[in-house]
Image 1: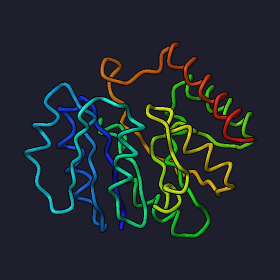
Image 2 (image 1 turned 180 degrees about the vertical axis):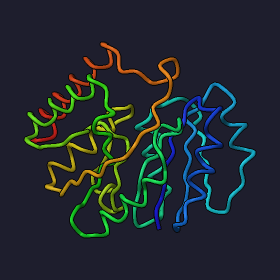
Image 3 (image 1 turned 90 degrees about the horizontal axis):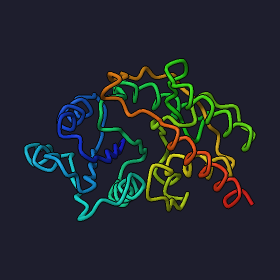
Length: 218
């Protein structure tokens, strides 16, 4: 069974649609949604949904994506785990190719890589990750990371914010896990709606990459 964790914050317009898309997939699955104390009508949208395989967790305060993901991990039961963004950028239909790849036995973690669709800043940050950790990846910052439940739980994740994505990858590298990239086709939103990586975000990401290099690869 595949456990899909959906951390959500202020996605009232898309949360129902993404859950319905995930639920329509022809695979055995459970959906664990963690509402990180959204300030909009996300909680109300979630109350209107009722599926036997849907579990919804509400944080009493906003704690960050990493905290939401870890809350989700505390409640999953499937053999495999993947994290789904709630904003419709990633297409759940790509799960099928990711599952096929990990079931082949050639990888311990499968990344859904956006390749040519990535922003320039993401390319530069991926280059930094490759240089510091001696890997050859195309998209270190893809949110699609498929792993076995025992593998991701064994990483001992601690991050509260978006740096959870970096922590997962760095700890997987440290453990010598085999990483395989599979191309996915993101549905990039309009410039107005897209979550752009600004200069401040890039500097923060660089600092976190250097931090994880110093603290987690000793």
